[in-house]
Image 1 (cartoon, rainbow, N blue to C red):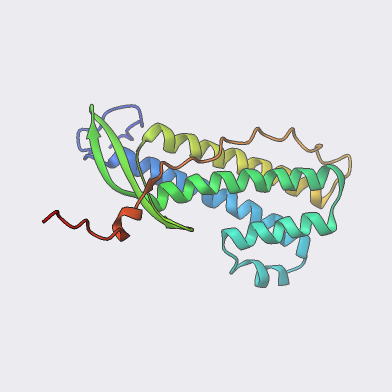
Image 2: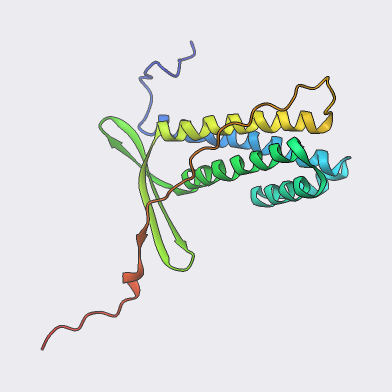
Length: 198
């Protein structure tokens, strides 16, 4: 049985396979980036006890701890690199969460698999966010996760041994554009019904 290239059509492929594969790829790429961030925090704490602290941290707690370590214990280019790394992390994580937790159904539009995102937020007012997301959009964020993972590893190597044996910090990658979710107010749900004229 020969392996099928991702570019060759698979006779046995079912609707949704390509989209699901892209979403799964994003999850894996994000997990690798988060692992490298965890290693960076472990390096600041030091020793095997670091695992006790970092193993239960979620993504936001991990980023907050790293930001605090950067601000309190580093300076100069290393601090700037870590802060940039965390800004990149926050932006990429917003997309990752939106896509991974928001896609509720797949649609076939012009022979392309498209995910339909629907989420709600209640931050001061009730809002619905909904839109269609393409495989290309998912792949773009997976690519950002790879850049994030690689940059985190370079920062880690420099922070552990900033000697001449370790390559200098690479140029910081340009930040992805911040996620802009479409917004639909749901305030009408709490409006009293209009009375009909007598």
